[in-house]
Length: 127
Image 1 (spheres, rainbow, N blue to C red):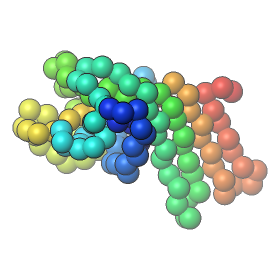
Image 2: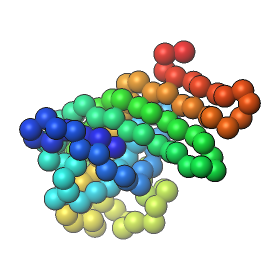
Image 3: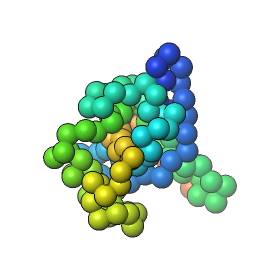
């Protein structure tokens, strides 16, 4: 995921994520003192991008541009924590994870590519 620092510089980090299919969004759990939060204010959306994949075995990628938000609203926190904790065995509630931040990335544009099959598969939000 790439976020913007306070000075506008992009900052990228490899992260574990969970996702919700409908509506599509991705959830990242990180520490409150990490660099990726440098330009984010709680509850406000900021431009971001995210890339998933690439391995020499699978040859799949998902490239996305959109918005990331450091979620602070209690109701929304419960919703996205449920999404994240279904994939990862974490504390029972987000409240049990002091010093943490939940980020919600919502893609506005995306492109999915499968390189290996013949013919190559490319699907995007512009199709």
